[in-house]
Length: 156
Image (cartoon, rainbow, N blue to C red; front, side):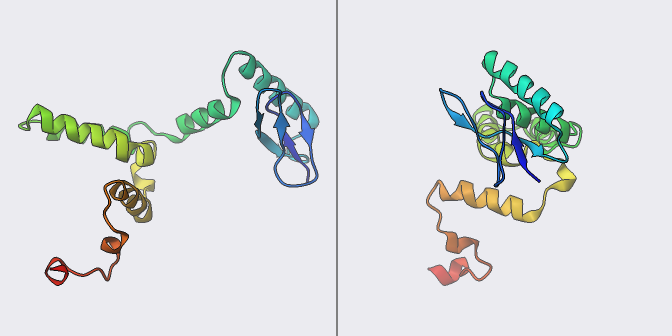
């Protein structure tokens, strides 16, 4: 099988791993599939579509990722939809400043990692990874996330 790439200014089929496309401005990779699976005519069509996106000022890979996310998100069951509904319910009786802070933290730290995912597809390791990434911003040591971390009384 020969990888085929179609973004940028060239259409290439190469004998080694992912294809590379080049343009004068920048180099990028936009693989379209492997040769027997994606025929030359289909690769040319995909290449033409990518070129038209580039001419319109749109990055073809960013466009592809956005479309993929749209297809993967079941809006009623996405983490973002449920989190927004929870926030609207939770906000009642809280100070505006506190509620706005929680919403801002959710939008900056949690939703980028989990927002588009269907709620029933989120696994515990994803949540732990997201928590670790966010706590490390504030200098919390990784040892506190260990299952064998000392308790509060053992640390003092």
